[in-house]
Amino acid sequence: MRIPAVPIPRGAAASAIAPLIFDDALNRHYFAKVARWCYRPALRLWPALLDRGLALGLGIPLSTLPQFEAWAPELLDDLHALLRHERCEPVATEPQHAVSMLLDLPAFAEGMTQAADELGRVFGRRPRVADTTEMLMSSDIARALARAGFLAGFMDGRPWVMQGRSAAYLYRDGEGLPLLVRHFDLSDDVGYRFSNRQWSGWPLMADRYADWIAATPGDLITLAWDFETFGEHHNVDTGIFQFLEALPQALAERGVGCLTPGEAVDKFGGRAFDLPVSPFPVTWAGQHGSLDFFLGNQAQQAVFRLMTAAYGSARLSGDPELLQLARLLMQSDNLHWLQWVDREGSEADVSAYFTPQEWMSLGPERLLWEHQRVYVNFIDAIS
Image (cartoon, rainbow, N blue to C red; front, side):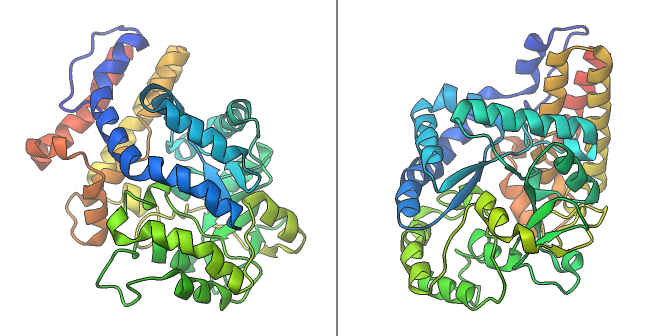
């Protein structure tokens, strides 16, 4: 977002509004930073890892593709090359990395279908399996994905969801959508704890990690991370790339095979176990994996209300370009970074990390006011 907020003339066209609410210079700055430390080295390492036995499902929000095209077209070529590998499978994700599934479920389902169609057009392989923003999953979200025609989805395997069940199996809610359940302990050992020198498992070596995987009873273990885990969240000095390079051999030596998400569902779909899915969304974000991570304080609740108003106003306008801007205003980061408000601890630290440092000189109170003002200005301009 462009913060501090700037005025928007009433009745302005979407093309004039976009640069007033989004900061392309700041977006490009952070894109370049992540591209240098993560996208560039990781996209060039993964094909060799796949050749040596790993398998990868890669979720790509459509809203990232114009950034790659404009700011790093050579990396878009690398992305194409990676997805041409038979052991890399595209995964459909919410097109704008937005929380649309919390606001308009039918529109979310339509957007997921459009995302799969467009990824199929761009990369030549249409996704069969769907993920959602921050892996948000609930009974109604699962039904929406099933009706959109997906083979399966992902869900984080938090204890309050699993109710004593192991995450190392494929599940479904009755006759509903098969769900690949992310093993959050083994996933977070890499995603969150890898570079934590205070963690009892530090330093994590590929051999020991492969031992933990091989010793886990069950049919399959679903591991899922932000792509930025490799080089951005854990920088090159932590040994994260050396860990990845050693992982294929470590797994092979223990007889552990790797499958893409679609292959896993093809193999184990016939014996999926029953798991009643809660109507309260689970997410891979936060300590407890609940919606409180995004809506747990008054600042988040206020912005969510403004997201709703902006989206409703855009729909009433009948202008598809304004509606697209409203969808971008629903991106989860616009709730994620507010998690630190009135809180302390590791979750607040993570959210502060995702807050652009260029904003912090405003101070907390003005920053929250300016953030809300972006939405208010948008709503006023299009109403």
